[in-house]
Image (cartoon, rainbow, N blue to C red; front, side, top):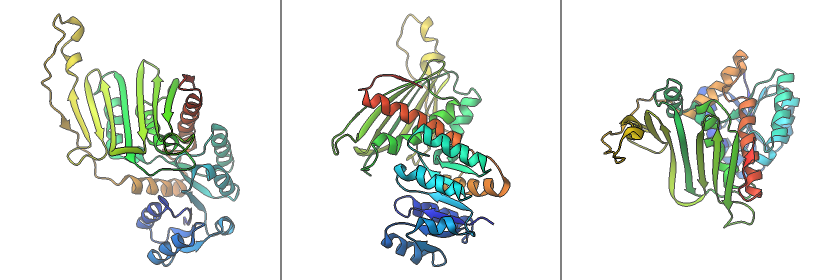
Length: 333
């Protein structure tokens, strides 16, 4: 039977505790956090769950066979490695670590011990994201030209990582999942307004094989809350709006290509196509993600978002960070 120790009861940890408890109220054995007030709240909501401020209590407990880490990225590697060395299956919130070297070491340790290593790239469990992957795979969109992602909001500001490391892992993981390949070059520019050398907004340009271009804009200093990705294909265009209430995935014909733009003498084309909404399965991504982790442990399966999936995302972010530090110079992966 799986018993989980959760590390981190701040921003995201309580959501993980909630959804693991939906699967089975006895899945979460112990919650660890350095702040007593957070543990008090957890104990009030889940009286049967043990709480502690000492991570070693989780590592040494033979009843606990899986660890979930939901704390600041700079601590991911050290705590994750300790968990693996203690023989625990492991779920780490994004990003897996902050360098590719750290990611590879975690992968090697997990594989050497036959332990499940999974990363919290939640959008790969999202029905809208999966639907778009299906549309791309089936050729419904035609050749993919470019993708533009915007993830903007006012806060939450971090003091240990910039907006790119905090927010962009979502969009990078989605892009790689959709296109089934990694970018070959990346450039990034960012600006620091609130804290020195911590960029509040970052714009990333990624080039993929086949001439596919992707742009990611992230910011925690924007008055609007925007979560959109636009995909332009030779046959159809898609707008994925995570916050939409009337259809998260909307498609329309690419009028310019459908009308044979290159063959027309009159380059003006009246746009007559309308958006249609794709039908989606009603699923809760976080619950799907948590259920998948338990299933992988129980059945010895490889997670969809395994360690190598996490490595690919960190590889992109690491290259983007180099570009940021070089003033936006293009970096080859």
